[in-house]
Image (tube, rainbow over all chains, first blue to last red; front, side, top):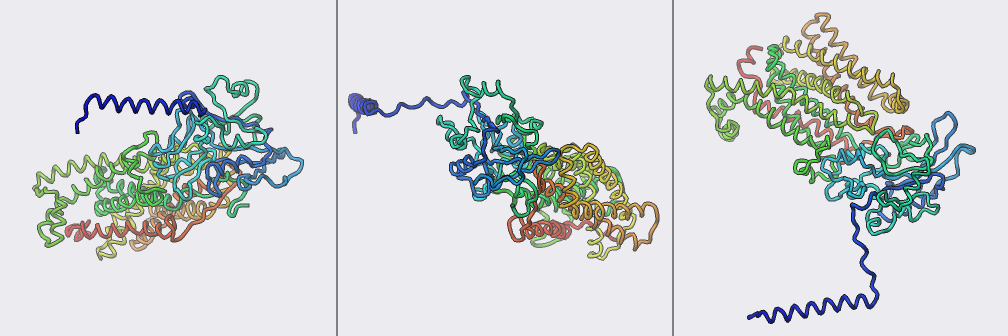
Length: 246
Length: 389
């Protein structure tokens, strides 16, 4: 079949016309403009947690479990209740990770508070360091992630995590952990746990965003990370963290 | 309350991640390193008395080394991905180096040394056997049929060099296994710079004890009389290395107790409760103090041959149990307490599961079957030596 230069221009012209009319149609019907592409290098994610605001309702645990299909008995996030008596070891409980909240306090009249826990998204992660194949890594925007198609399931990272944030997925046989709802935050949403916290005790923050409230929070409050002596450069900051918390 | 849990564990900590199979891993690699170091005593340090066990020690090391990766492989969630450790190793990971250390030790050190040692025998066997055996031994010659005195001299020189490289390699193999545990800062039970060196000396202890037991057993089977100077020398070296090993472990214990950091109370409680049987009774008393006393008695007094044999065998068997208990206490013990130091979990060993007792027993028996097969294929005792002993 002969295909002249004239034919080429004709077909090309038609394609161009169709494409441009499609675009115009989209603008006419008011389809949303494409959001600005997510640039990993522009973000450095973390979380701030106000212990005084946490009421131990477990909404975050349930939301996380539903959002991320966390298998029963394992936790990407959980809440601990501390009951501290002077001069004694703290009494700590977290029944089913606080999935259903907490029963009435066992020790009345003690200093008592709740501590939400999740992966600390450490910048110097011991889990990342030990992974034999690099299946777990820190993303350019500061989230510790697991490539489930690459993880061997050796569980060295679980041993290396000082905070107990990792587990072996019982069906997938790979390591699983909090991904800071990476599938959400890269679309401009917050994490499931933050979105469902009724008191705003947990808040997703972006350290690279100069307008983020985290800067004011860090400037005006006494904050601490868990186990600072582990030197993992954790990025989950706790306001008013009691010394009893482990 | 979660069954088996006392106090508070982080919710993901309740289940143990490293099972009995991971206990076997340092135990088996330890036997490899120890057996090889015993072999090197004759080769490099010219301890002629242990000559009758030289070849057996090499074959023992090989048998255990062949089995060493199997418990790891079985333990992986995705064993089919294990080759990724070779193809895309993560250079900051201690574990990623396993494949390379293993291959180096297997290919460069052990197989080469065994081949050089047996080359003349292999050529001889290739010429004197028939059928399948002949083909097998001909393949093993790798086409090198020259066993002239000059060629043997070269073999001997190369073999010496390989052993010299082999000693630090054996140290590397097992010291490295200790580092896998010792470098985990999150776990105070493991995190110690002494860990690689404790692992190394305990490896030597267990390897020497294993060769001693195997030597006595095989002599019984082959109906060859035991070379007592050889047995006395092995027992002497077992005693020396055991003294160093025990001193290092006690140093670690004293240091921890004296320092008494924030983890101490939790770990101390664990030793007095969940690890009492395996640590205090099995590892320290039955597995260390009793064999040490037996071996020390033999350094001080001269017993009759029959008594010495019985004492060495008892001491070696107890040592093997003690070192196994030590591996157990490191691997399992290190996961029984919470990293919050507020609670304890328990290990529920399965039986016929992938990481259960049954496959573990199979993996423990397998090297002995391989040793017997290797001894049949590559007899460690030539007619000359057998008649000597």
